[in-house]
Length: 65
Image (tube, rainbow, N blue to C red):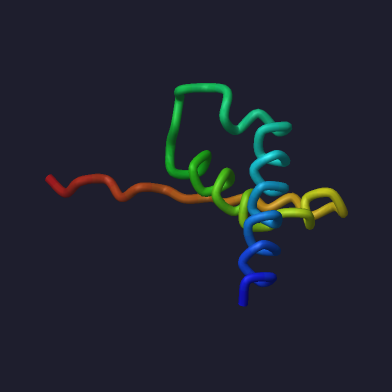
């Protein structure tokens, strides 16, 4: 169990490094797509370095009149 937790933490740290290299943490301008891309990149972890480039597209619904 302990080894699995260490692997998960290392996986997420590598994903955070990849997100940082892509500039996802640099601007204060946030929206649904940017937050989604950042989260998915962190979760993808080391897969980012073998060509996985996850992207999220989302739209927020407009309020009714």
